[in-house]
Length: 562
Image 1 (cartoon, rainbow, N blue to C red):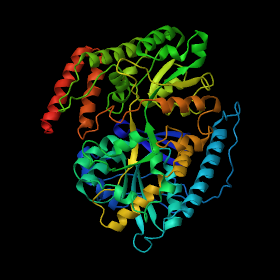
Image 2 (tube, rainbow, N blue to C red; image 1 turned 180 degrees about the horizontal axis):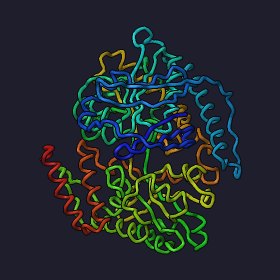
Image 3 (cartoon, rainbow, N blue to C red; image 1 turned 90 degrees about the vertical axis):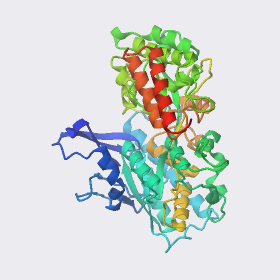
């Protein structure tokens, strides 16, 4: 069980959410007085000091689950972390699920997920002990490692894995669980300043390139090819999807053939379409009717029925390189749009890009729910779970979430199915994103770097990937074997699992659907603004593309590309 605080604007309201096995089990809201504000610059200046003052949760046993909240403050103020540990042992049982018998209650799902996680954690320990690795080779040389993780419902899996790792190695893993945006900032400060506060930081693949370009990341091949540190029968590097390996090489800035990060079970994300099968059946429709952008537009129009509370389509409208840009890239690349030419000059105001903006604006404004221009991931999921939309385009993890009674009302539960993204003249592009772990060059000793590799190898090995999927909620895994390990029991009912597996493996998820360059966050923000202005009818699609073209050109010139 994991407890997080989420602060609303101006800190007037906070929500406390408690997760277990990826499911929200408690939400409380309270008024609070506004504390002294810490600005963005102050936060960045003090991010490393926060780590030094002890904002770290230690996982000593793999059955230990912390409750508590970590608060971030400037130096000179009090930092409080309260951790309550309960140690329990659960017998390992193999889950049995038959078609039609998939749990439809939160309690049933928790029981199923627990049994799956226990099974694969047990298999992980057996495999580790049978491997050729001397897990105790750093005893007396390295006593602890600091690991930065973005906050999320899968944090329990890291804690359990760390306890098992300590049993093998004697090394304690100190976790700093931080909300996603702040986690990126803290990690960026640490890596680029080469401070070495984090031995193993979780890294967004779109940010990896800036670290590699600046020479701040260790190449991992030397650890991967060292038989004292890596047992390839245990770690199975060839099992990782090739597109992820390409992205982990941080092209074009990394050394050819080198990798700088290892993917985590927390996600190999891409986009999918989701449709209400009951509505499709009612109107005699099939997935062929959303297979292309033209057909998608026609079907969204046919199913749009606002007077009955049903809207034809929903996707992210909120501005942001990880918000509207993440889902709009399906349109952009699908319509044949490109980002840059071979010399890194932007080519954003082409007819293909303008058509992609127009199609996105048309389907969102004509057939989307009111306020869709402000919809983020949570809002799109909520609209689908409440039965307000017939078709959605968003992250792959909807498949699990919308078969979960915590997220879907009774009239929707079991009726939302997945399908691949639509195809255009540019092909089918599902987008691409994953969390990974890398080793910063700023770490003080070689033994610490090697020990950090051991932990990365352990937590990103096949059995731990499967166990983490059970605890954190199923998403498209970074490994091919995970599909077979989970064997149609985790998160997706058997009658949809094989279809989902086939669709996911057929999806054309390209690592360069968004350009992996250090300037991407700024470029992506410009594109997000352009899309938002077009949705709000402040600019035409052509005007939005022209404006973005000029702004991106300025960014690339300032960065020295030409």
